[in-house]
Image (tube, rainbow, N blue to C red; front, side, top):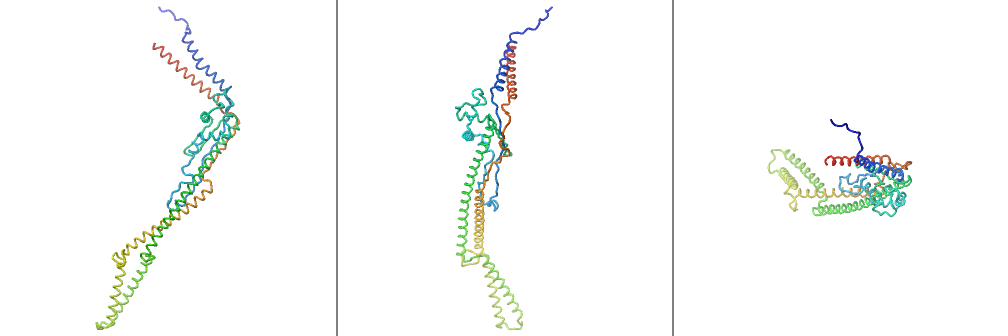
Length: 377
């Protein structure tokens, strides 16, 4: 018969497990709590919200048919550009030039090694610290940017946020200046080209009129059609007079001969006038009248297009000058920089809970690995 089991006794591995729990969980937790609640500096947050607004205006060239393309008025610029600029080292350097970041954030050094920076930190080290105190939230669909800046006192946090807004506005003004300059250069170039095209079109039409000796072929056609209509009326009148002669009149009657001759001449003239509008007419010229009309229509279309292009270029230049006199891009702050009353950061209880949870998970994982290896052995 087997003996009854004795009372449970703590063995060496149990003491080792408790010591590991104390070393890996309790002591780091106590150190973390001491740092968070005793050493870590209070941080105040200033928040701001803004976006880029663009004053849109339809160019005259687009209204008249899209005869020219302008790349001014802030096209290609959006809140994403500003979002990247605010997170850049350039922004950090501009803020540091106006507010000494090292002098402000060194106050907790060396006791607070996480939320402070040493005085002789390099620009790269300060930039890495800048990314920790600056938080940006960018919504690409709406173009809204939310800014949160953390500092050791409420006034400095608000000042940093205000400086960021001011430097962002300066950057937008530079984009405006570049956009206006490019727009004016483009419109001047388009206007010069439109003037040159208009001169060429008018010159070609003048040469055509000099060679054909016809100022307006359309008016010339209307005049010739009037001549044909008048000849047809005369022909009808002569035929009526011929029919009114007495049938008994002799064939050699001078009146009958004169009317027959008149009718023949009128018909020949009508035929000649009609042949003038055909492809075989105008034998004195190298081009037939239809070909001359086709050439005139082509030159007229070119002139009309050049005039419309010139009108559009003038309107576009006027619009560019008008846009240059106003700010087409500007920063619209829907939440001005706030001034905190309570220190929100660091979130001590939240951070301590996260640290303890991580330590506990790490200790449990190591314990499971140990027992797994022990059972296999």
